[in-house]
Length: 171
Image (cartoon, rainbow, N blue to C red; front, side, top):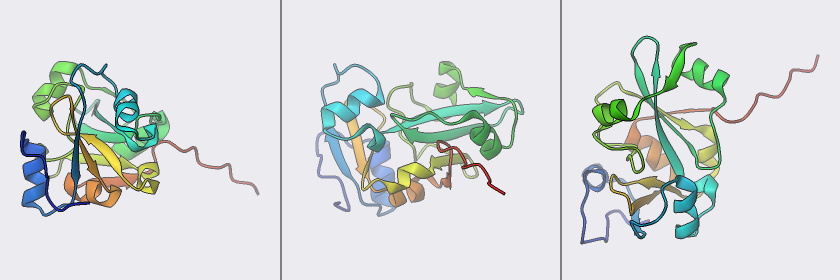
């Protein structure tokens, strides 16, 4: 990984955040006519779906919001997510709420730079096993490749198991 972007044509706030914090990353681009979805990004960039991150905004019944990052081919297990967020009543944020919280429309939300201090950001533990991850840069057609630990640092996230069922306890 290079310490800074080599892409000259478009410097986005997500790139500036990484550069300012000396977090290594690479940039990739793909046609902005590509059908939306993390799985499509994986295919066009030659990555496995387990390497492309979905950035989801959830909200609790207490009005709290959280960024949840899982692989394109995964969904968070409801019980594990509820436990991680400390609430029994959670839901995906409405598209207009996502824009209000992040400043971005659903489809290429970067997982860093827009969160205020103390914002709850969670990375699924399964992502930590990948050598590199693809995350949205804020504009459809632009992707950031970043190592998992650098993603955790850049997003100030907690690493939590959200996608793997706990094995049953055998007595």
